[in-house]
Image 1 (tube, rainbow, N blue to C red):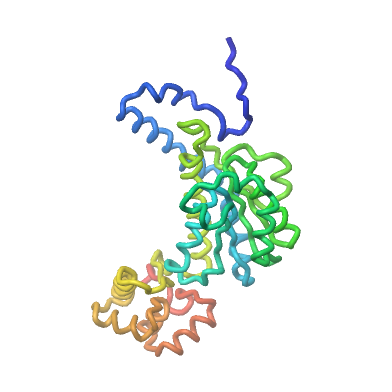
Image 2: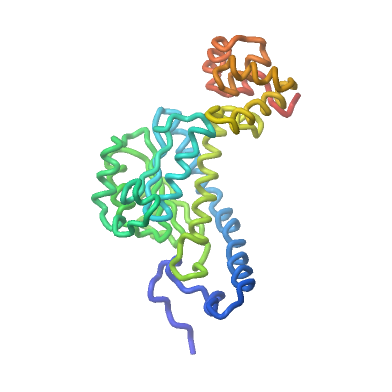
Length: 306
């Protein structure tokens, strides 16, 4: 007898035959099954490497023009977009406006599910209008099922306003989707362990893709030296300690010297590196950095070449 055709063509809504009897498994067997499924995620994301790289280049181009990266999603997808955006200012000293996250239902949906909020494309369009999205912006819609009305409404309005757009989903993209957007990223992680629970593999894939996009964009914008986050914003003791340790490693100085440089630089590690390397005061170091687009290596050389 042939297998029944799935009732829903979306990969994210199909049943996973490997977990069909999960309710009969022991605790350790459930753990092993989920772990085995999770191992497929990185490979699926890797299959989309070219699309991810194209998306990064689009993002960097927008940011260099003074535009913004704006994520749009609902539920888990929306929360992951807001999370990625929120982590940029402390990590890379970005303006909070540079990377933004829009979630259906607003910020209340971050802590309490408001699933019905995703059903209204006009709300997505309104959110785009409220942010005055324009031609220099890049808007990435995140909808693992590929069908969320809020996301489609937002992207439609973003394109009407001249922005470039991308779509991240975890099912097979339609021809229309591929034709409509500047880039489509579709890691096919397969059916979830619990049918339709896209906070699992699809959510993990989304987090991995967003991490890659935002991290690579920051690297290309000169906010990393070697693999050190030299543009971090010193806003707490943890980051002050990290900043001092970066200076100790890059400049070969002791902690008191690193602390003094960091203080003199106004808490900006990148400026402190240039001060220490070239013997400049903070004002001159900032001026030199601005002249080279903020890329430390252009002033003091490759970190690993020394």
